[in-house]
Image (tube, rainbow, N blue to C red):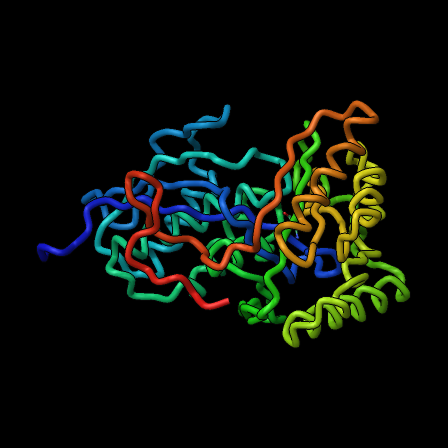
Length: 323
Ligand code: HSE
């Protein structure tokens, strides 16, 4: 083993908004400042991944935890001649719609990659992390894990290849999370296998316009494209105060608002973080008025995906990707 081989690493992966309105399973974005942390160290047992402990959540370590599945997949991809033991620090509540399971998988996969000497780029791990999501929710969706790995706003091609959309817009995201839990597995069952053509056409137009608006830095074209006729109407009844919070966001000037992933978090996309801050306050007031307990925040879109951090939580080594 060479002297510069890492024995242990600590990796942060950000929260994410899945779907971003019309992009069911194919569009996601990373949220700055909040996420999960995986501590990983090598063990002399090639291919093995064991979760020793979970901190910050009422959860027991298990072999089907997404961190374990992500780490095992990454060990195989990296052809690692070692195994890992993991400690998972949950910064994200489970069943909140903030990409909690995806962040654990992305952080674990990147930790393995770093321990292996970074043989692969982050996008190589989208498939194994999507497989971790399948274990957790019954369906291998990548709209959380791809932005958790890459940062920014990420589109998945029909073959699951992630494309990070480069945009000069400095968007802000307002988030309110009602105090309830929505299981992704259950929320996915609310979406029928076939949907009416009018819904598909509407979402196609909205998603294409949204992506074009981002890529051409056109915030006004973006306005109104966070309109989802597939998942939102079927899942909104599961979320306390959804209609009130969404209306408050639009009234306060958000570009659009919808369910973050499978909920219950409600997100609103805004021109900048200052606007997102005003919008999250308006959403929060609307929920207070109807006595719905919740937490709220405003953040920029995270430019950085899963990355190594030091003991103080500061990024190590890797340069920040361009927007
Ligand atoms: N695209 C997934 C869903 C995201 O909506 O079920 C889950 O976070």
